[in-house]
Length: 179
Image (cartoon, rainbow, N blue to C red):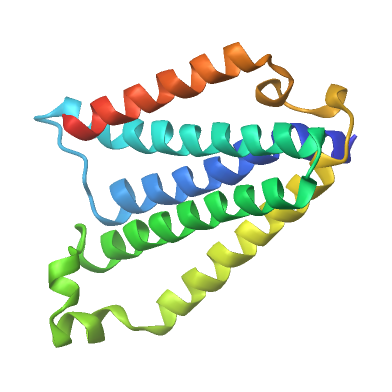
């Protein structure tokens, strides 16, 4: 029961964990809620859902390909996608926590900003993000060897439906980035 639940929903749980951490810091610590501009708050909530949803669909595609053959390369690609998302969201969450805003790359070139960013809390965040990603990869590896009846819908879909959903998610991500 627990194994099938993990196999079916591990991508959702992994990416939802990042979204919840992001939203908690964005609205709880950074106080980014702007009652006068509800659309800004909505975009701040939806943009990560679309980004993380696109990454989850890409990982599902890797899982589909791993089940067909050449398991290791596809699972490594899925792990790299998950690790990139972990690094991106760790940087976003940590910069929101520190400055109540996003820290730009230009600000990182200043010596005082670099000292500001280096702290034990960042190390804890790195360990948590890497551990969460390792757990995702381990469950993904188990899922890649499981039957299709245990997989989530994105893995069971036909390639046309999967491609249409992934393309739609990509277009929505591009639109939200341009707003």
